[in-house]
Amino acid sequence: MRVLSPVACLPLVMLTLLLPSLASAATVTIAVRQPDGSPLTDGVVMIESAAAPRAVPRGPYVMEQKAIAFQPHILVVPVGAQVSFPNRDTVRHHVYSFSKAKRFDLKLYGREDQRSVTFDTAGVVALGCNIHDTMSGFVVVTATPLYARTDAQGRVSIPDVPAGAVTLRLWSPSIRAPGNTLAQSASVPASGYATTLTIRR
Ligand SMILES: [Cu+2]
Image 1: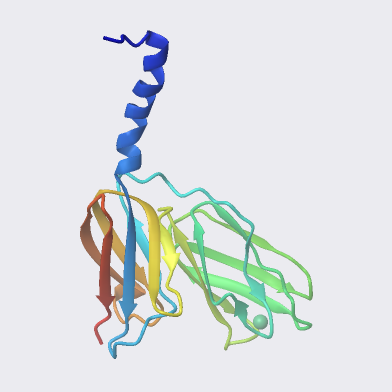
Image 2 (image 1 turned 60 degrees about the horizontal axis):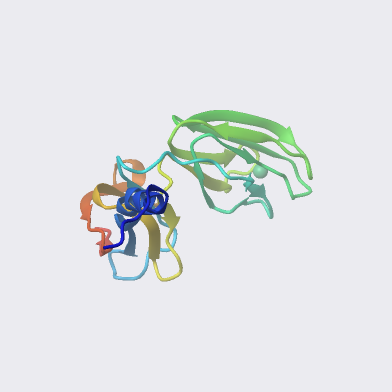
């Protein structure tokens, strides 16, 4: 019988310690449908799991003012992210928010001028411009690193979700519910999880 030396055993022990955490991470796939069955393309899906680490900002995060509009219309960032607000227009903008998650006011500034704001509380921050009433945008600030925007088919695929109990949270400005949010609990098996969320009228 061959006896393993303590040195040869060491990698095995390390592998055993690593395996459970690798094996229990699953991919969650969600299709989001509007009441008429068409895909919801401006949704943000966030998965809350007690076993997930806290989201870490990896910027740069940019919300432009371009052609008298916020671009992108919706920006998702982790808590603590610093977002710059460059003005790409020839006119001046005055960006503000009255949202609970972040109140701020960037006084009139002109072309290629830049201001930045740090978002330190999770929640949805609605943006407006004091000069242009039609300008509307959102910064969605998330504490969980497990998030994604729905694509053109209304789908998200989120890897590395710890197996076990989670809360699926869906936000979209078009959802007519408190906080424009729908929440649902789910149990994610290690083999992966797929579901369809349909927004009620
Ligand atoms: Cu403006």
